[in-house]
Image 1 (cartoon, rainbow, N blue to C red):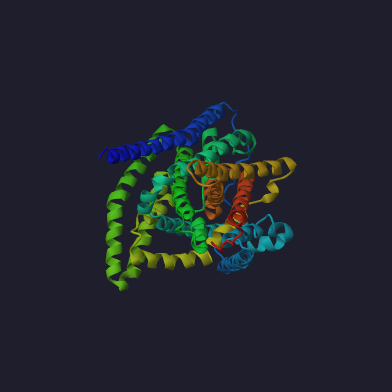
Image 2: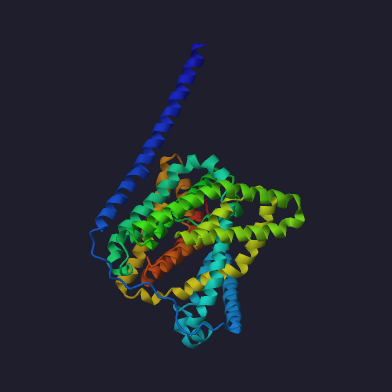
Length: 474
């Protein structure tokens, strides 16, 4: 009897030791950097007010709708996206890398320089509002599908095991991004933007991971069920939820004018979340169950869920957060096991991939002027932005994973996967430009960073995983 008791005592002691190590690792890898972020914000509060260029105003001029021009724009955008996406796949890159590059090539940084007359005829500033409207609908649908892809139940089962790694992979780039803001604030922040909003946005933008790209890479490489794949999926899911919460807070602070509107937005957000996680979740489950029983009801289910997603997006925009969060949450609360939800996702995904997301890439490219990164100093700062992004995300993830017990190879592979930013980064950057937290030159630098970090994933992962070719992913 005594040996059994001794074994139980040893098991209990071992469990206590593991818990103590996890708590200590969390305190060092997350708690300490969080305290340093507060110190950075305190130091930045004493900086002179930003005098950088203002965020761009909406395009002025005639707003007459020209259907022929819009159709021509869509043909050129979709054609360029498909062509460069296919070329990206041929060289082993995710399709999204080619589509992001296509957006840049159609903008003032390439077409505008090589053939200004063609660029002016095809994309006159007064016509871009219509492209933007379609692009924004595409992004709302994209965030809705990202929410569907995020399995909250699976996240609860596996999330705590990846919590230290995930939060370390958020706090490290958040710290480095906010520290970089001390250098960039005076010259590259739009005039009048408070340092805290600018620094937190820079940190949030450095922290994001392209969850859909990462998930597709793992799936097509056959790594979804591997220990590395399981940790990567859990970390990316926690990362995206945490980064979007940080971004929501930044948007909320940036948009609120005074304490009263801020408190009203906070109260509205709290009430919205309570309703969505109770009545909203129950309603979505009931609708999915009814549609699953009646295949003919899929179309009606799609219509109702789309109305709920867009209505939720309108509510979050109205209360002062952002429409993207409302669409994302409806997707996240849908029951993942329902065949009706799977049918809905398959119908939406093709429309987004082929038509709407290329419009968003093109609109982002049309807003990006790489010539604003002018001179050796500006390009040196652009390189610094890239290095900070990679060091924070890849380095923070790899270090935390190594401390958690992974081998260096798997830890660095996890860091390479977490460093994938893709479309999620462009969504965040466009939000920053829209709310006036980013200036056009810094927006251009961050777009370059998003493209390069996404393109780095394939060669890094191949070199770390015995040179086996990574499957093509979106």
